[in-house]
Image (cartoon, rainbow, N blue to C red; front, side, top):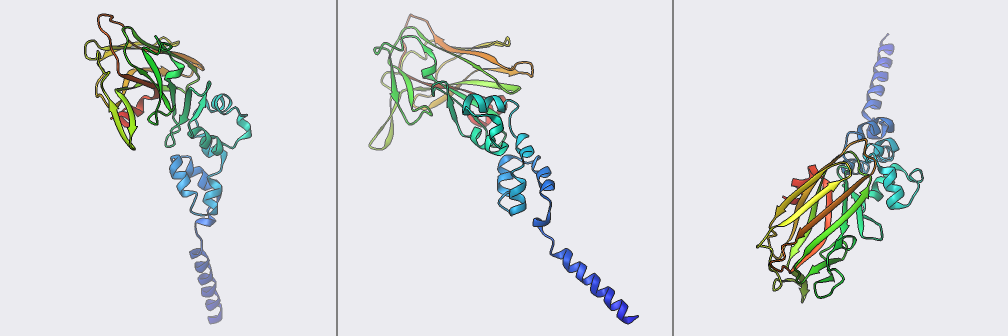
Length: 285
């Protein structure tokens, strides 16, 4: 009987030792993937470095499909020029998080790495600017301060008007439109940033009118004086909402100061940004 008890104890001891050796590598990948669904993309990528099981779980298509916007197939076809089924969902997310240009390189779209939300930018070169072809009024100047490497610089004009249009498939949600502007002409001298304010004038006489309209019926108009010479400022043009019944939306945005009683000048027009409205405070506070 003593021998039997001893055998039982040895068996239990062996079982205990076996249980103590169980680690993260023994967790099924399917279980880990099910947890990853509830994590943000950066958290998933960080945990994927723990071991082989976590790395394998992080590759599951059903995990990354929950991080992609509902229109990701449209984005892959229009922006990447690929068949959506030719890429894994993780690769799709990674490629879309990198800013991708389209429509001749004057528009750029990307996904926010933390949330998978869609962001978009349109260069001044894709907009209709009154007098842009007359070098007495406007010039395109190269600069490292623009994501498009160039901005439209206004020297002086009586009638100021900038108009842009965009037709795009947005995921459902609320979006905000901003004009990125700069009073003064930035440049570099001996490796240091300098800003020439000599031509800045006329913007404190009358406000600039910003307008936004969409094919879904949104129409917004506001006025604002331009401020902070020497700094890039994002001026809020308005918000619009996309619901599930709007696969493709046409957007028209503009800014103007057409009071011809005075001239205005010394302004850089870089681009417009379209962000999810929830990003507004985070981006521009």
